[in-house]
Length: 118
Image 1: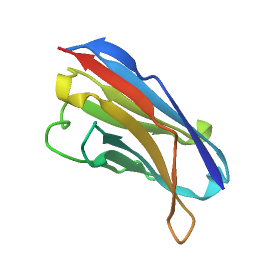
Image 2: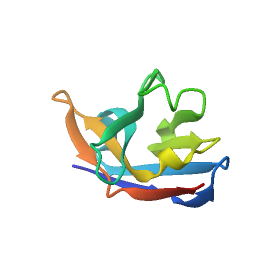
Image 3: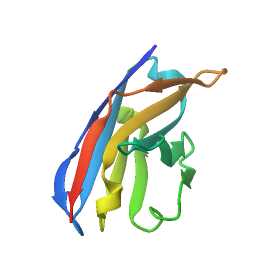
């Protein structure tokens, strides 16, 4: 089992920045990939970014490329999402996930709200 706890969400004005954190505990030695999804009201959950144990990163829609940066501290089992130049449409609940073990079982955090005011 892996437990994920997100933090860092909040209210920010358009153009501002936020840094989300996700701390993993439990069987962290078996985590392969960590990443972020987001879900806006009335919309499906959307992939934002992921980072492998090796440090290889993948980003989702073009709207976040160049503005969001994912990073990872393997020693502290923590993944970060630096979000710059935030837009109103970035408003969503942001969820952290981890892929664990040879079966790539997926674990989710409880989510953290990000609200961008226009």
